Length: 235
Image 1 (spheres, rainbow, N blue to C red):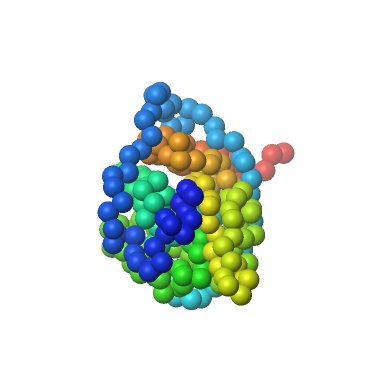
Image 2: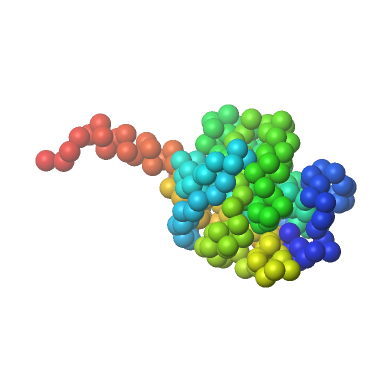
């Protein structure tokens, strides 16, 4: 995704798996990450709602896939071949997914979300093929969305602080977002961004601990609510 200009993207719109971009390697950790639950992730910002499209072509509110579960969200192209872009992000996500699935309770509380940066090429049909590819490998919820137009996508990118340049078609219409920095956003079940990962910090073990920290926070909140309910109203 980094510097994803025309030279690094496939004009054919081929699937991600159609080329071998080289091995993706996680950043080298120079420290031992703290255990999950021993720290608190700050509340960065709420996610603004938006209307996007599902692979079926039906509308979907962004809030439906950024609340209710712990969400790891990223922006992508179905056809990106930049080794430090979408293939690297995909490798990182599948690595984290395999670790999450080792804990059945955690797996039920986690989802991944991928939103296309290029609604012109990544139509509902195109993202449907991408979703089918990733869903064959695991039952973990992984939602894939696109926008109707680039104009409708830009406010979503702006809300996430995803700075981009906009490539224009010959007639002047915005065609796709390019030149963006690879980021992933960790969102809690209330729809609040709790961590933002850039390329230098996409370390699966750290990210997994952050996910588990939110999971433990959620369990503690539920337990506290149950206790308050059992105690009844204070006199």
